[in-house]
Amino acid sequence: MKTTGIVLSAVTAIVLSSCNHAKTKDMEHVKAIFPEGEKISNNNFKGTAYLRMLMTNAETFDCTIGNVAFEAGCRNSWHSHPGGQILIVTSGEGYYQEKGKQVQVIKTGDVIEILPNVVHWHGATPHSRMEHIAIGTKASAGAVVWYEPVTDEEYNNL
Image 1 (cartoon, rainbow, N blue to C red):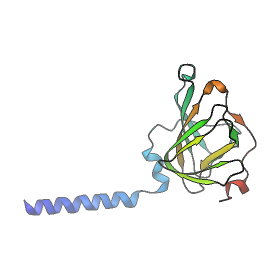
Image 2 (cartoon, one colour; image 1 turned 60 degrees about the vertical axis):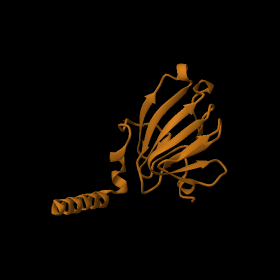
Image 3 (cartoon, helix red, strand yellow; image 1 turned 30 degrees about the vertical axis):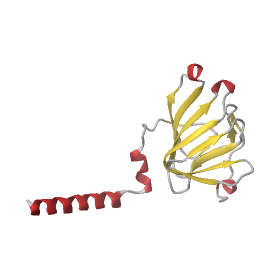
Image 4 (cartoon, rainbow, N blue to C red; image 1 turned 120 degrees about the vertical axis):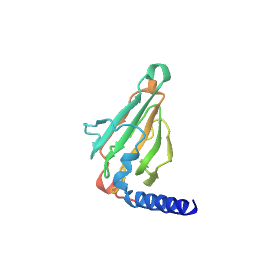
């Protein structure tokens, strides 16, 4: 009985160790909370991103909720939300920047509160995929306003 417990503990340790070694940043999307969604195909993103709307009843709740997945190196253009926005990072590592401020590194578990009409951008770092839940607050205030693309210099300005 004592030997069985020791063997079981050793096997468990080996399995856990091999799982940890197999974990890489490229595999983070495997742990995604929501399915990937549709590829975003507009000029407001540089790189590959996916969107899955989670709640679209904006009239009743006065908000929208979507899951956005950015492949490594992908970012959106400068934009603002008349009603504000909340981002909840669910996996990976990314960047967030408000116009006139420094770029911030954001990671799993971070919550970013974006006030109405604040011009900003967000996306993945060059080496990590990043997913976040985007909550468009006070949706009745109007749709997102898009501006110019984020330049490579702005993106790489840490």
